[in-house]
Length: 237
View (cartoon, rainbow, N blue to C red):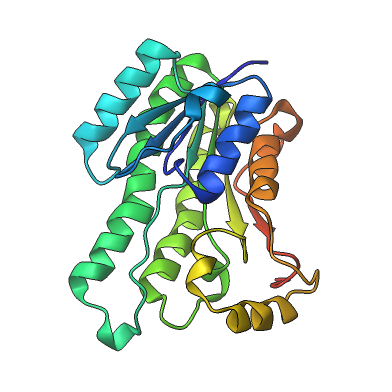
């Protein structure tokens, strides 16, 4: 069945790959970007909207535009996120707050908005994109790890609140995925990282997109409040 899908932070990496997966399956897909719109989205039938998830007015405007163009959002993938990596002692309060405002509160804002339409339709899917860092922590990522870990508590609370309306809420926790975030590392660092992964390779953004698409389908209608790790076996916990 064709669904209306909104993916925040969909202009690159996992978000963009997920948008293409949904579009290829015949859905109506909208993505948001904060600064730079992606090129060639019309070739995939994907609609792009500028949206800052830290600004509620931006979110309201985006949802209105999506609804006028595509219809009520039925599937939300809250993927927008930033990093301000630094050791905790060197992390400013402002940087810590900015990361949480984008990664956690931004996800809450967009989910809260999407859930209104899902409640009326008595059907919906919300997927939060977390991270391996949110499960095990990482040196220099106190703010990022905290924001991604908190998505688990948020998702499980929402899953219980909205289950009676046939709305599921889940979390995907990617590990080392071949995106521009990893390009900041040297080749030696990446090779050392790969050695610690049981499957012996980096993940592909499309692999995350397919898992998200499955969780959004009727085949996953009995899965809610779950965290799905996609990390090549790096953390089996």
